Image (tube, rainbow, N blue to C red; front, side, top):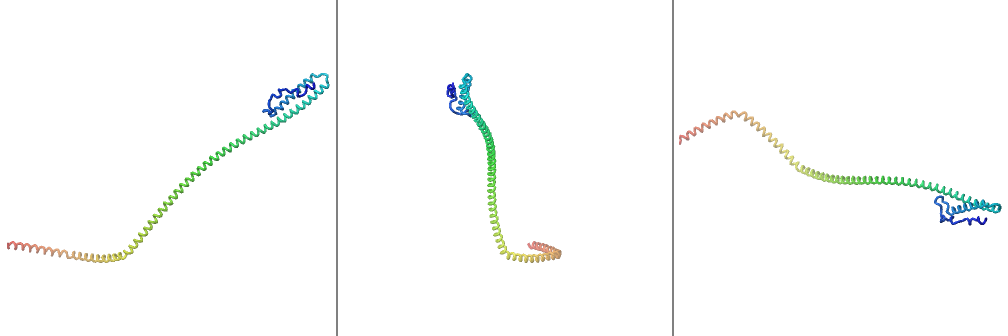
Length: 245
């Protein structure tokens, strides 16, 4: 009976039904440990059945109890190991959940940072466009200022040239005036002389007119008398001429 209760005698092909020695995807315990637990469980069940059938054989019962106790101890160790591994797996899962939560937070933060960066880039692009527009406007203003400055310089040059010509003309006029001044003085003197003569002649004419007004009636009477005498003499001469014919 003891030989029949050896552990290897209770091992069957069903214990290797899980295939390879991988890890359980649910609890994280190795498949080999799961097989060992099942094998120990079946062996303990066989020992318990054997114990139930043992009657009166104290040595066999004690031996079976010892083997069962040993298997119970091994099973307890394996269960404790599984429990520890499960606790570790739970801790790992908790840490993994924390890590995933942190990852989600990091993703959200990265999304916010990307959005902020995109907004910053958009704002920077807007500022750059505004700066370019202001630079172009300033360039146009500077170009207009240069054109106005050049035009002002041209006008100034024209005005200076006109002023120079006016100064030359004024100098020539002053020279001509200096040349004409003696003649003007002569003309002024001649004018004064002629004015004096004109005044004298006018005075004489006025005196003659006054004299003519004074003697005019007597002269008119004498003229009329002379005209009458001439008419009478002409008539006499005509009559004598007629007699002679």
